[in-house]
Image (cartoon, rainbow, N blue to C red):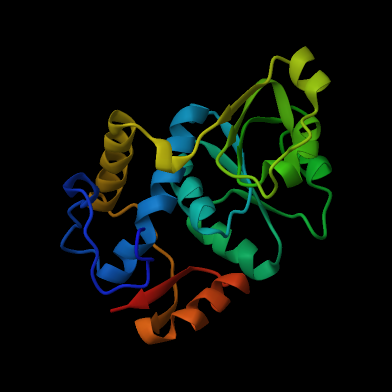
Length: 230
């Protein structure tokens, strides 16, 4: 934004102002925007439906929480990676069928065990640079990797595995969705809210004057969306 983001008021294009359902409070509404739009578009690209098995990276994160929920609503089986028992509990609450603690377990071995050696149909990836090496051990032939983030400017893909197994790697950035894609994402989110299907995980809340503390809470890896109130 031209004058920063820590503001009481801001002018935006009208199409970015989406009506919030009367039964959804502003704190929950603040959780939705970018995370929920990223999640629903990723699920659409992955082609999730009944019978699909998907691995969601970071199931306790803001995007991961919504991705789990949208995938489950379509009938998919959801595996997700987490880094602590607390985050595993949050992922299960969102609907994950299986959680894998990547700090304490071998992700590839667990995925193969859970899927009876088949592998998952799709990976929804938040950090390709860190996790690309896992692709051969978790993804079935002709599977898909849907990438919405990376922790480094370059990532080393297992190119030979991807080539010989006809793997599809699809990148997207939620800020670059076109009007049609944005409309589809907003529609999916609105329908889920109307049907009472979405858990909007509100985390710690801070007044605007304490926005530095809010950023520090995010940096500590707080579970739930950190909210700043006006």
